[in-house]
Image 1 (tube, rainbow, N blue to C red):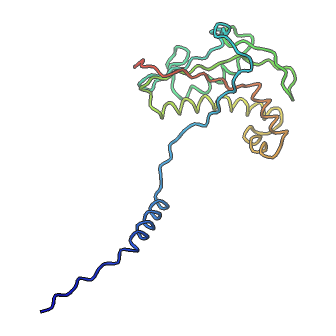
Image 2 (image 1 turned 120 degrees about the vertical axis):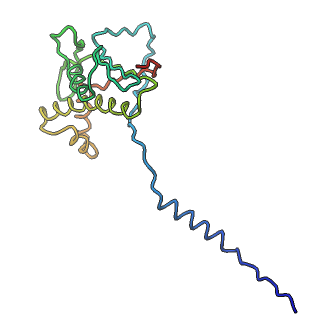
Image 3 (image 1 turned 90 degrees about the horizontal axis):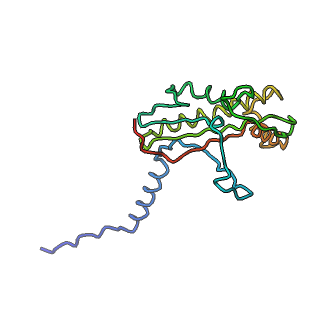
Length: 200
């Protein structure tokens, strides 16, 4: 009896099929996007400043500490995250007659003229055990405080919200200048120290 030859399998198109499957899975798979912050670093100072020349008074600093248990200590007092924005707004806006709140400096601002601008700085310190979720919440509340103050001033001066101004700024140079003016009156100064192992 004659032995039959086993037919060979044509594997020439296997590479094409594997490639198509790979593309299919890459296109159809959804990736979980991480929540993050868009933060622009400040420009380098024009003049070189020696560290010993920088002296910041305690009254100009708003201390925000977050421990390993995600608890907030603001100006030496434990508070809830829901209270942070209003406390930050009060500090940023400040009051020239209150000796415990930040000092002011007279600044020439377009559209507003001579304005007394607060010398406020928000100092944020996290623990290495602070959760990323809490870190984001604190950042959002602090940034939200600045944006709400800018919004209130924009509504009062021009009858337009700060968000609307940002949208108009895509096409309007005047809107861009208005945003710059609002940022000059309420400059976002969040100083973030390196996390420490403080614990509870």
